[in-house]
Image (cartoon, rainbow, N blue to C red; front, side, top):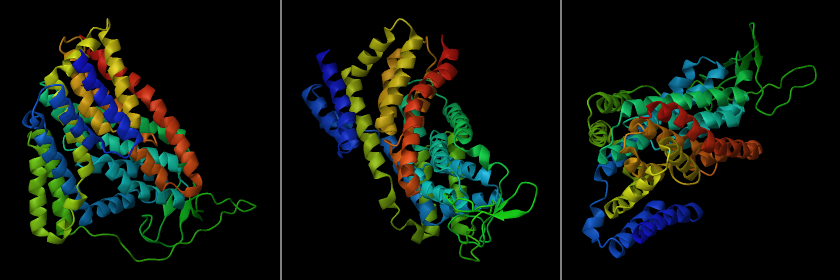
Length: 457
């Protein structure tokens, strides 16, 4: 028991030190794996590295490498421009466009903070242009990232499905993706009407430059309900006496946006093929991603320049480090000991709720990717008696641990806060803090009720 407590203490230290200092969690986890493995478990370096997740390494590097090329060759820019033009000036749909684009990026392998980092500045530019609440826009971007985050080709999905497979648990990658997506859609609907979405309904905007923020355009106008158009004022501009709205002019431009050239078309085909292969043919996502990368590099060598440097190496180190340390804990029997302790709780349903609450609260302050790698193995012994459905608990744990990323103490929440208009930044921070902390309680209870209770044995 003393050895198990040492290993648990080391895991707590990993999350605590990385949360309150600049030390990287993955590096800490590798050091802890070496220290605990050699001094407590009696393992040598080969034993410790035997738990290194080579399959996850290939997946993480492959999909983020592919995403970097897609950004370099303009595929991401094309997607954003095409989607914003598709709403044809309907301001109420712009936040949902940002939701879907962010979800699409994470679904095909973009790391969640990277996708939020790309889309949040674009979304905030629409807020300034059309008077959309930055809190509303930020939440839909973050929820979109979580919605796509559990596809079989995504980082969160790869981690979760990989841990499930290695622990011989029953899994359902398609159901995990679908339930996560629908749960985040439901959260976004609530956020939409809670933070000003109702006031956007029926409003239209016309932009001579094609409608995308940042692409220029002529006079921005807004439809006045039953016909005709009135000029749109920038966010924060008060109407003049008599109801006249201050007119905002933007530089005229003839820019029609990026075109769908051969390289971008091949990138889209490759991304769709990778998702289809993972969903329907059970192909390895990492190897498919590298295949697409090689083809795209041969077609457009310039797009691959610098792409390796833009791989999510920080996330790769984090995930691989935590999973390596958890491997040491598994070989020591600590994971089984913890799981057995949870399983001894009189009510299996209460034990399942406790696991989900732990995942949500810790993830609000630490790394979601690290939490997923550590908590799912913890639930393995708990699930062995069959009183709680494995698939339902995994879905509940995954969703609970990811939707709290809206907290401004997490990377995604911090990115949205940093990109919000300066004068509204304190309100955005406060709003995200309230929303994120409420999710740490609401999400575990809701997912437990939706996915765990119906599957009780």
